[in-house]
Length: 263
Image (tube, rainbow, N blue to C red; front, side, top):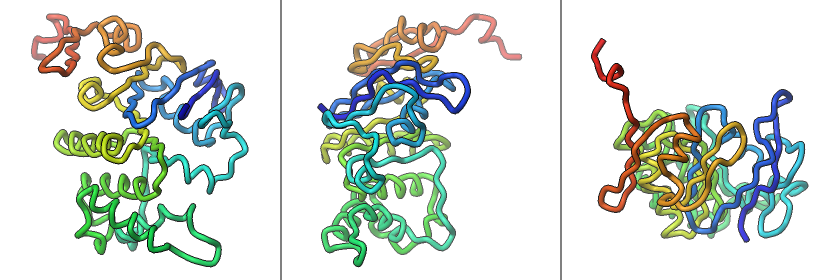
């Protein structure tokens, strides 16, 4: 059954940001949340984590409501990577990744042998195994983003939520990070939900797409059937051509002639 959001309504104390929203996320697939700024993408992830309380509705995991589940137990099921991350200057990559195991530690002990195996495997998966001794803040932007993904992977939760994991990265690292995220579903069986802004990145990597506008779902399903000229217009107020190029959908906005004249 996996992760479901049922009839969710939420706000930050003012107007509703999520409005009677219902959506499910299939197991071992990469689902992208897309939509205009302020449509509720980040709020949806925060609502799943319980950071934004629901006025109505529920978040359900395998048929069990998540409301009332403790933070440590929730961390065993769901890992969350927010938009903004912070790491003190003294912390090394190895120490950052070790934080991922806190939900499994006993009150009297630290990481087990299995935990340490998970930490090593996570660093190997993101290609940073030889940099565990380096301070996180001394890494490049792309390496830091992979470092946070390593921490999320080392948490060993089967569901991973990521809010704009390629924000502020150049094109090379956007593709490298999303390729890594996609491999989490295919090689590790993870269920990944990721907020993205670029529709061409979305169609390149996502199995499923949820298109949001004003806190409601405009369209949801496999990327190849969901991203269409009609749904892009309805969601973004943007006229675009959607066409297939070697089995991959390309989104090309229609530009008025006046927009093409240099100023």
